[in-house]
Image (cartoon, rainbow, N blue to C red; front, side, top):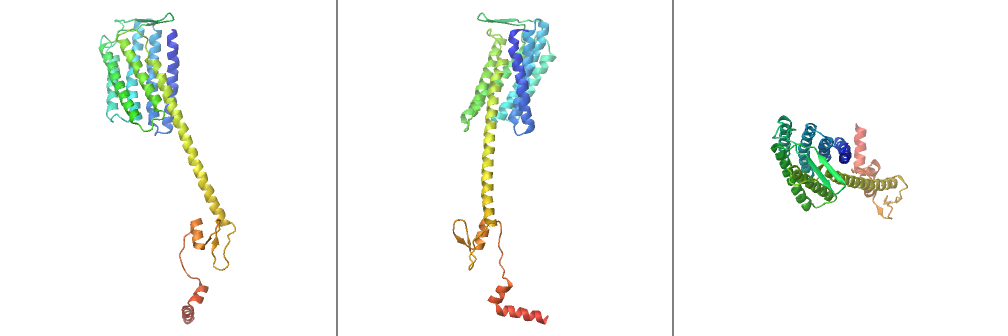
Length: 321
């Protein structure tokens, strides 16, 4: 196994683990759609990384061409998944654009496997690359020449990435609460420039190492930072709600204790003294300290005292019956 494929193995494992984590968050609560879309990006990057690992360890063009096809399948998946993630994050794409991007990339993927030859990838046209950086790094890629269809695919992906990044920066600049979104913007920009570098290396415009498989680590870290921050904010909000609830329960308990304890009541007018020292009508006190409501009537004793004639008539009527 070549040395420069080991970091890619680590990043591929990281992409899969992070993808499973974000997928579990989405499955537990479908409201976190950004987590579901980001898990798809992670899985797509995992596919691309597997293609890179196979290509870096290949020593024969007949073998390496299969890994290159897997790389382009990963690029197609990354482009579609990243457009979906970007749309969930900023909401700038219309509902029809994301499916259209997915369909175009699916067509590129099918063409890569269905049309082996000079238009896509073929082992009969090798394009081996050798990169040296200083006296320590020497990398050799057993690649085949990239045909026009796959060059168009990379160009289409770059156009999608460019639109995503321009829209993301505009969304960030007009956002009122930027919070931890800066990390996502930085991660997306680094991811974009790494893809731009790989496109120019693949043409080939210049000779350099491929960076796309390494740059995704920055996007994973930025997403993890945002998710962790959102989790902390959510816990703080829950703590505040619990504190307010406890205060409301405590206040209600005090009211109940007032009603269930010893109530000072005037022996003459029947007013009740509250905990602030004020004397209130019993109706006012109960309305303030309980959920009781009142309807008015008159008891038999008061009826005899206030309306003796009416009371006598009622007695006479009852005797006659």
